[in-house]
Image (cartoon, rainbow, N blue to C red):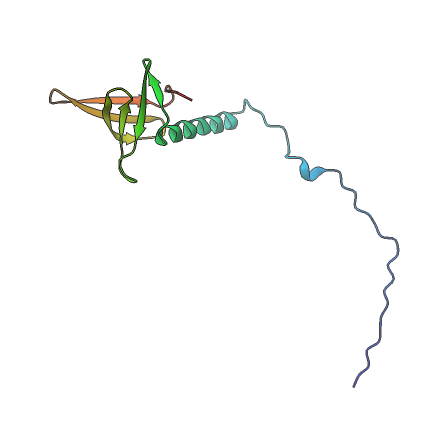
Length: 122
């Protein structure tokens, strides 16, 4: 059987690490006017407006208040008015555009909404 010898290591002078708070710095200041920041702000605005529309927030067009409602989970819905009810069916929802249609006296009337210009009621 072998006998293990104890080894004692002496540590001389413990060095302290200086912290200059760099981990809290996010980096350079952001140039708000750069093309990238303008593009990112536009994308965030489009996503915000699109989600407001899809979740059924009320919006105004010519001082009338409308709202989008969804039929089923995967189907497109319709736009309703608080007073008269059903206004038109939605056939397409894009990033900034919504296409709708309605039949008036046997003719199909197409309606196109620009989400960028809608005024949402809070």
